[in-house]
Amino acid sequence: MNQATAAMRRIFLCCTVLLLSRSDAVSADGTTTRGLAAQRRENQISARIVGGNTARSGRYPYAQISLATAQGLHQCGGSLIAPDVILTAGHCHSFFTQIRVNIYNVKSETESYEVYNAQRMHFHPLFDELWFRYDFLLLKLDRPVTVIDPVRLNDDNNFPTIGYPLTVVGWGLTDPDDLAAYPEVLKEVEVSYISNEMCETTQSKGARLYNGYIFNDMMCAMEDGKDACSGDR
Amino acid sequence: MPAAGIGKFHMLFYIRLSMLFPCSFSFTLFFIVYSGAPLIRRGSTYEEDVVVAVVSWGNGCATDYPGVYARISYQYDWIKEVVCAISVDPPSYFDCIIPTSGNINNNIDNNHNNINNNQNHNIQSETVEPPVIEDHVDGDIEDPIRVPGGYVPIKVEIQLDQRSKETGWALVANNGTVVEEVKAGTYTTPYDLVEKTLVLPASSQFTFVITDSDGNGICCDFGGGWFQVSTLLADNSARPLVRGYGTFLLSSTNVFVTPLDNTPVLGLKGQGQSQLEGVPPCTTIGRVGNSSDGGIPGCLDNVLEINHQQTSSSSTVSTRSLALGTSLFLIALLR
Image 1 (cartoon, chains in turn cyan, blue):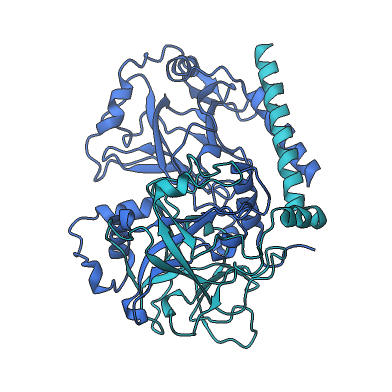
Image 2: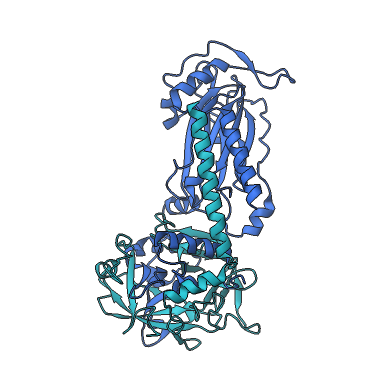
């Protein structure tokens, strides 16, 4: 009897979770775009900032890497850290099927680039997708890249210091209301390093959303002179 | 209109983030396509650039929140270790030392993930036929340690995927008794290689059921998992009875027969041996197996004994299949 009740409860839970996740997925597919767009406007997300400035082709060759779907849609960036190893984020692991190297315009059909495949994926052993901890993934390529040079990694725990200017290089979104509107060419965004303590206690509208979510394996940076969302004001 | 630039899994990631911070759905807009991109310390030329972090996540829904990155410096040693192990030509600044032992490679191998999904799905070998257990002739195998009372050691190995918590398994005797059950949620370490050695009656038929609570198997969307049930040889190597890639959906059911009691290859050394202590002798030799083929002689009662000793679970197969059937039905319905 007890067992039957437990089983029923499990089935009910399972059912609820499935239903919930399905309804989310429907939204995710964009069928309720109007509601989401309204929500976005409410949150006053600016279309201007997210894009950053256009980076000169060849200035960041090691970052001219696009992890793309079979159809060629850009999904994640990465950096070449050895001729046959790319460093990217752990949570990018299932979003792509091909690696486009030495690419600058991710939307152009006439763009020339080299296509590589990942032979193996090496996650950080402590990678936790739910909490985004140790969000590292190393991709072993099927052959070495010869057209671009790998980049060095920072091994200095005392760097960066607070306020140090850093640069994000990638293909970020240009219009948050349109998820397809990521830029064509590589962008660079200037940001400044802040401490994890500052990051965790960031307060906005009386809420500290990051409280309890920032760990040592993470670091934070703010856009210079403005936050990531307030460009319209 | 579907979001053309964002893949299905990005959307799931997105939903998960918005659940974590229930402020808005538009949570990671900035980061969603920047993800994986480098955060760099600019030099005067690209040769002087240094990658400091990897774009990870951030709150796009409210103002004033910084971007969050995966910090490289604290994990530099891990990155170096992997690069040195896998790269054919690691850059000199990694100071790779040619490994003297296979340790690094072994660790890496445990973590292996073939991400070519199409290729893996094309293999379509949900279960590999268990090899025929031939009459073994004593050859190069050392004098095996025999298991008293007609038992054989059986090793279950599972290479988990990233979503290790979704994986569970059960070993069921032919009479429906659950010999061992590991429920979903038990394995908390992603990509772990888990092992369990059980002592089972020889010449008996068992069913090994592996389950994934989310219905996506243990391969290949979240890593390349696999499973194997094998008998242990005297040299502590394993001879597979059941083997499969993790390409099943909700579950994969595999029937195998434990080797004959007099098979000289059976023996156990090392860590598994302690499990043999306290195993009761086989008092009743029964017949297990299909009635149509007459069944196979086996030690039925002792399955129950082992059950009491090794698992506190009282779940029955019927409950499990009911739950499984219902889930399948629900999934079919929701699609």
